[in-house]
Image 1 (spheres, helix red, strand yellow):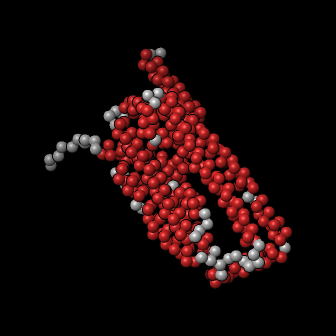
Image 2 (cartoon, rainbow, N blue to C red):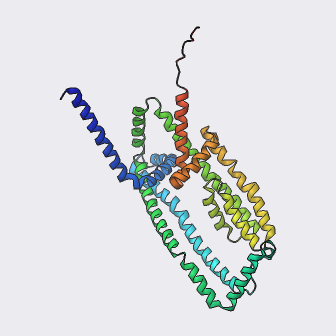
Image 3 (tube, rainbow, N blue to C red):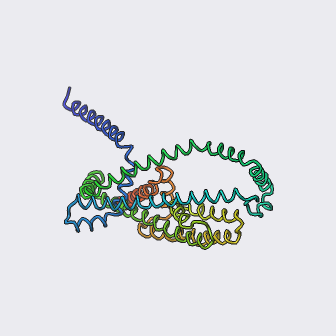
Length: 358
């Protein structure tokens, strides 16, 4: 066997070994990619706060990382705990409200439904009359309908448990990202310098600027829309406007999702017979609440990154479809890095061909 063939065989075996090792590493780490991505985004956005704490505690990494992880945990768990307590109160209120409705002899639906959809109104009236004529049969019917949702409830409980585990892994991972963040950044820069000499820093800056802009753009837009929608709910007389505002905030994290929030409340007010408040809330939602999505989000994201809002919108929606909620941030970042590479390639000097003379 010649030296050349031995060298080729060695490189081939090395490539196969590295490919197998890479596949095995991916198989081991793939269940944790989403929590790791969330931890990386949270740590990146809150890094200036960590640096302040790091300097205040005498540049002791473990203590600074521990304090910052505790603050991050309170930031994530606090609103969730408050929302759960608020939801318990709302469920009790809804239960009491349903009891009041069932005690009424008349159908608690606005008379406009009789003009708009008489067949539906007659069907509801017939069911309401039967319910009061035979309460036990109505309870059995409701119980049978509720039993159909038991499998979905089990799936929901399982999903909540999995997400809580992911949240715990995210917080745990964030501690090490805080503590070893500088070393990780140095290693990333070094790896990019080996892969793309002279361009790695630019790609990292593009990814960092886009991540920061998307996070602040999405969160600020959701806060503004939830605040304005909550004010509209309170003025329109919708029940529990604070709870509805929190739900609106969660829905507003998804681009163009806010109309589903205030639109549902408007329909509920309309069905309750409060036509004036329903129309007023719909106008407020369409002209004011939804317009915020067209002002703050493009202003924060496009201005900070110099990237077309159309590309950002495709990144957010496409990332949401491909990766779930984490795709809200990963999608625009991926497209931003791609755009940086594209611009870098276009700016490469090209050699002009000499003009041929005929």
